Length: 530
Ligand SMILES: Cc1cc2nc3c(=O)[nH]c(=O)nc-3n(C[C@H](O)[C@H](O)[C@H](O)COP(=O)(O)OP(=O)(O)OC[C@H]3O[C@@H](n4cnc5c(N)ncnc54)[C@H](O)[C@@H]3O)c2cc1C
Image (cartoon, rainbow, N blue to C red; front, side):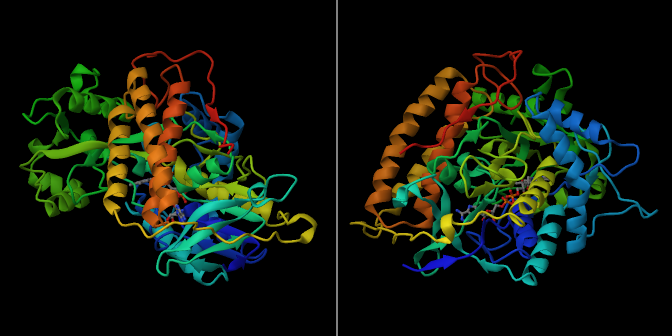
């Protein structure tokens, strides 16, 4: 088995991974791997923008306060302030990469405002901010000297204790699988940086791309890292419900302009749940749609904005109008089918703002990490900011003071053992287990939870994890089995965290404990001790 050496091993090519690699490039040899193409990541789909205090009338304190309120006071206040305050310099990094954020006619930044923000502080590049950032960073990456390996998927971290080295248990790299050749090899590095994103794919409905299977979270947990606040999964209330329209969000502005949420008979139902009707906040709308779907057994609910007429709709929502039409839905004459969809993972690998995890040699940045910024709910457009700032801070820590191997000797990484494994011959088993996990998470561990549903999910997941383990060791690894194993771990971490929280707070809402407790507490799960 070959072993590839580098000073910094970055996993993931979204905002967090690309920025970490770009900053570290001047300090040593950087290898970046990503499991599909460079652009296959959540970052590329971000529409709204990136938060940053830029307006002289706005302040860091206001931004921090808005973040704490959105997070139901579970955020870590010093962390929140630190990240908000570092945002302007991190935004400059993007501008230097060539991102052209929208400007007003007078040359100042064209800042927009989203729900929960008390000021205009969102920088955007049209409604394709993520795509523009991703393209600019990739252009810069190509000139940076960073070695990039696409279609390369991380299998597991290599820990010193597991390879028989005594002393402190450290991460010294990872085993990876080349999707095209099927070759498995080791990457050896004293500094591994996980920037692997969230785990939206754990749920049946998600606006996340296929790569969002929580790999980094699952393999950090398997390596023994502490995991925090996994019960807080943010659902976007209105994702277009159509088999070919995965990931297309119907913006909240459509409700802002008068769309009503209705059932399949066209009956408005939101007033039953909140006096503000269809204009209630995101989490309430998501919960109400979920409740109506469960009550009626229907697959989706609908947005009705027909009263506004074609001319207005085409002018006000050209992109949404066009996209809906592509799927045979004319907003001027048809109801728009929508479902809530898993959108953002607030919890993750417990990490400091500069990426330090509970495992020496292992850092985590971006959506896979839990720094304490989001608390129990993410404030809109704070996630790209966090990825950007934490990548910068992690590089500032690791660049000048990298971890090095003890006594300068690189550990020998044993060859990947396949044992008696044979090529898989029943892919249907894998796809069935995938579907089962995603459906049970949607039905039992979704937007509204109860003790009974969580217990049922925990029992079924325990059996599934055993079946997956058997399958994993019996057959040669494939990307599908790796991802299946990882979504099963993330699902279990979400359930266990939800069971530990005996209150309703932010995104975790349970009928058994509907009140918020007076003392906010983080949910920390210890890593696997196998
Ligand atoms: C539709 C949508 C709209 C959004 N809009 C906004 C917005 O307007 N503003 C905002 O702030 N946030 C927004 N978000 C959230 C934001 O996009 C993400 O939180 C952010 O992009 C996360 O960046 P990241 O670098 O941590 O992860 P990602 O961008 O998801 O990148 C993760 C990377 O890791 C790779 N990877 C994963 N597992 C492995 C493995 N095993 N081996 C190798 N590589 C691996 C993936 O392929 C990918 O390249 C939105 C998200 C979605 C889905």
